[in-house]
Length: 370
Image (cartoon, rainbow, N blue to C red; front, top):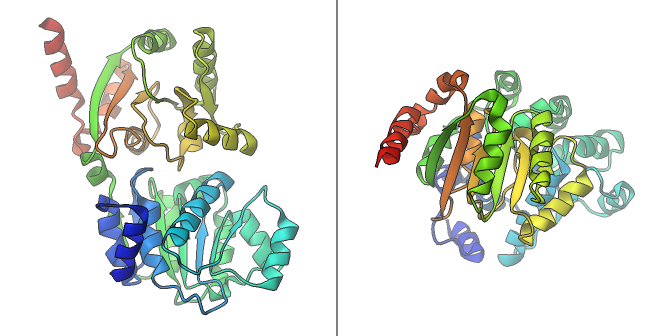
């Protein structure tokens, strides 16, 4: 635990998050884990801190491989990793191997010396390990599959499977995901050894300070209701979630017509646009971000004051991951959901997670009568 305290001190963490308290002891014991948790719950450091304690800087070989489904997520993980080892003054070499990066330069570096830690996307790792044969993943001791359901949805699981086949049978695997789809189970059963399953969603949400508002609207007037709502709030940063791409575009156009320079994050957002968005967010140049569920996955943003659900996701688990982006780190947040009559059954599925829509709506009616 001394090195964990070292990392915690280096990062300035006074306390660990719920997911860190649950996961770190398991990974210190080299136990395989399957973890469901919202973005922003501290999961990246939950696996980085304990797994770094197992690495040997004297061994010039790949010991830890981290796979993320997109270049943007891989870059975020790379920055967190390099920041941590720099702050803790650890002598580990880290390489980022993702689409959009200089492949020839990566090949030259790998031919010279293998890194201790590899962070990359399935396609680029598959290319360098199995096609170019310059990345020696057969020495990997620990594999982290981040945003696993997104990897599945994007069709990258065959590449991940091929990479896992290169690694030792004694490999320790950690899987992190918003949800664990049934289609992912064959892969998990094939490679993980008696894994511990941890669903941190409810515990993480219980730590958040969120005020819930449910606003009834006729489906045909949903966009009108949203613009009315926007006129009456002044968020520090608001994310408006929509379930479908046409909705994302319609919302963006409506906000633009109101004179609001909102940013868009959808499946059509290019890597260059995502990088610029990240810079704009870091520089506090964005007040409204309109996003689809898949596109916003893994994008960890601080200081979100409002989450607005324009439409509900097909899987209500994603609703929980949407609202889990606000009310964090002791700050208050507001989750506002536009709903129609046909949405009530889906919303009532949230009751086991401490969100009783009927009670919230009843309280709202009482407040209006005062």
